[in-house]
Image (cartoon, rainbow, N blue to C red; front, side, top):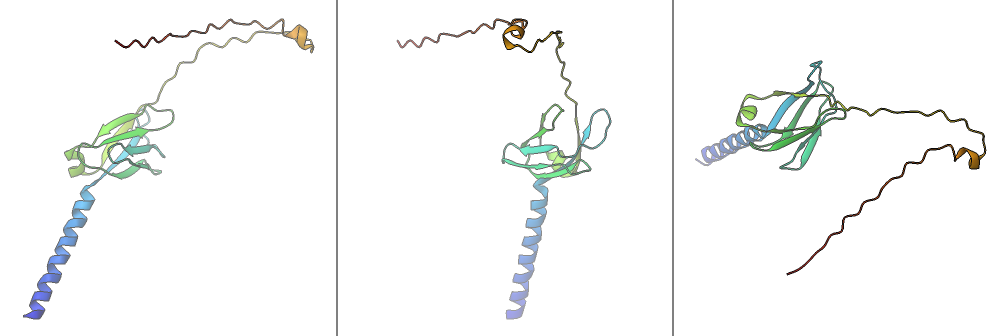
Length: 147
């Protein structure tokens, strides 16, 4: 009887630990981050779970996994790409990996004009050739009036 009770106790502990492992695996989400134009994987993309304040980054294949629950928000950032926030859903946790695309950030640069200056080597003469733009400084007066 004593051995039977010990055996049942050991079996119940084993089942409990295996259920904890399965629950722990469901607390992670996996994904692959790709470029929207080339559809190639992006390496070293930063991923931060804003709700749990933990982070990770993608590997060479663009894959990642991070601890997250349903309704957690993942913030994805990568230099030269538009950063996005993604919400973790039940389907993502249930079905496993998800493919996320990042779009390249296009920046328009202003025109640059290079003026031709004939420098003499004398600072007093050369400084007179440089055009000085007057910059205006604005200040806002903040009036804090208590009633």
